[in-house]
Length: 170
Image (cartoon, rainbow, N blue to C red; front, side, top):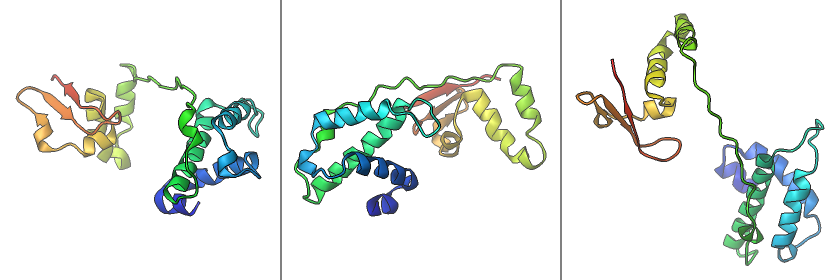
């Protein structure tokens, strides 16, 4: 936890994950934790309901698994473990992409609320609607990435870490 607090913004979530890992692997040394035991942990954890009685999401189990892997990588760095058993275990494959677009009739409704104390957001929203750029992608754009003569914007630091070319028309 000291490493997580010093190096991560999401360290509070790690506190919850660490409790789960401590309870499951209690009394085991690092050399006793095998890939088979890690795989067993993943599947048992997936089949355990949440505190609200719902099915646990594969993404949640993946976060716990990633923390366990990071703990082993830190242990290797500090010479407290020789190998990471998680490196031989795969995460659950997720299909959690969301595709949500504003319908043509929703765009004017959104622009109508961009008044008063939200008026400063209107240009960002217009660019987002026209080009599909996220806020961060818009704010990191530089003059050289906008070509007005060809109506092209080239975003280099996108969420998917790819270079994207956007065209606009008036």
